Structure formats: C-alpha cells, structure tokens
Image (tube, rainbow, N blue to C red; front, side, top):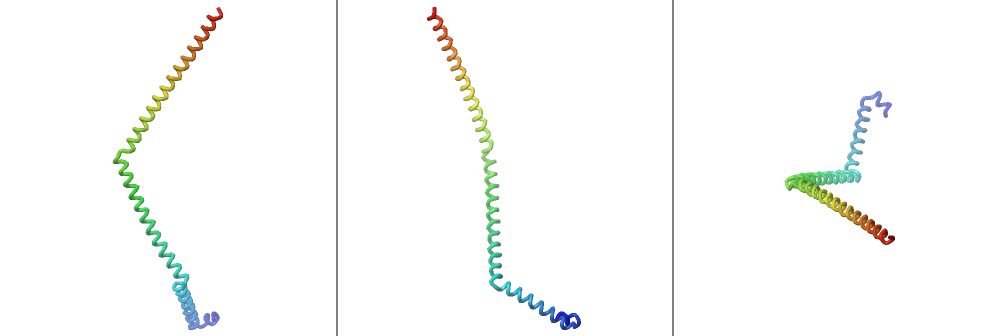
Length: 125
C-alpha cells in the first residue's frame, strides 16, 4: 500500500486517514480503558494530595508566624537571656565559694601538719 501511496494521491489520503483512525482509536481505548481509568484516578488522588499538602503548609506557615509574633511580644528571648546571665553569675559565685572553701581546708591541713610537727619535736626533747 505504501508503494501505491507514493504514486496515487487517493491511496496516500486513505493511508493518512487510516493512520489517524488508528491513533484516535488507540487513544480512545487508552483513555476509556482500565489503564485510562487508573491514570485518571491516580491523577485525581495526586491533585487531592497536593491540595492537602498545600493546605497543611499554609497552616504550618501561619502557625510559625503566629508563634514568632507571640515570642517577640512576650519578650521570651530577653527573659531567657536574663536567666542565662543570672545562672552564669550564680555559677561563678559558687565556683568562687568552692575555691575559697578549698583554700581554707588546705590552710587548715597545713596548719595541722605544722602543729603535729611541733608536737613531735617537743616530745623528742
């Protein structure tokens, strides 16, 4: 048929028409068949899921913006910084106190050793 189509215009037109009908029928079968229905269902499900995702992202963004606003309004960051400073100062005071107590214990130990040494010398005399 292809050889005749090259010499006869009517045959060529018929060939094109038959090819167009074949493509249309294949497209229709795919669209109306089980695969087409599955594809349509999957497409609808994907669309619904995208809408849900978009809605969830919108709600999350709004919640994050509201939380950020509330944190700024409550001066929470400033309060936290103040608490951190207070805790560091208390830690420094405790460390200083511990060091003073350790030094006092060390002095007491050294004094006891000196006293014990003097008693030992007095007993040898």
